[in-house]
Length: 173
Image 1 (cartoon, one colour):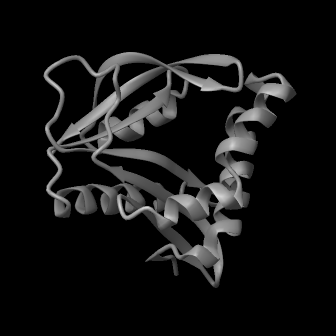
Image 2 (cartoon, helix red, strand yellow; image 1 turned 135 degrees about the vertical axis):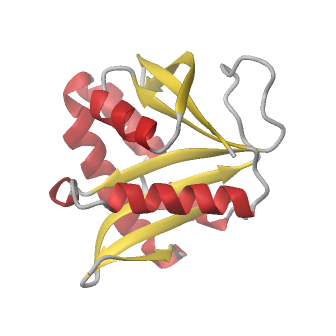
Image 3 (cartoon, one colour; image 1 turned 90 degrees about the horizontal axis):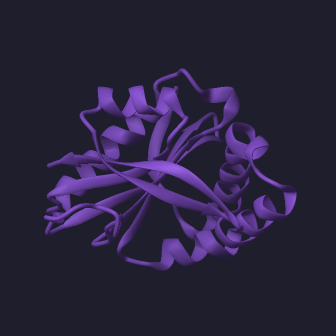
C-alpha cells in the first residue's frame, strides 16, 4: 500500500537519488553529458534538497510503499514564473518537481501527489498553482489537463547550457 508523508531532512539523500534517476530516465537522452551534469550537480543533490527542506516556503511530500520511496512532489509558496502573462496571480504556488520512480509509474502515485499539492496550495491561501512541463512530454500534458491545469505561456528551461522549450501550466484555485 502506498502512503504519503511529509519529507524530513533525513530523506534528502533518497529524494536526490530518485529525482536524479527519474530525470535521467525520462530526459537524459536530450542533453550533452556536461549539461546534464551541471544541472544534476546544482539541483538534484542531497545538499540542494536539505536546503529546500529547511525553507518554510517549500514543502515536499513523499509517496512510499514498504519503506521504499516511489515518488515525491515539491511545491514552493509565493514564487511565480516571469513568463506568466499579466495579470500575475496574487498568491501563486509553484509545483516545482513531481517525480515517480520509473518502476512505479502508472500506479496513480502522480495523481495522489498532485492532489496533495492542490490541497496544500489551497491551505496556504494560493490563488494559482503553476508548473512548467517539457513541450514534448505529451503524456504529462494529458496528465495535467486531467487535473484541471491549462497552458498559459511558452517558456524555456535550462539544463546546463541547453535550453528546452517548455509550457507554463496553471490551475486557478
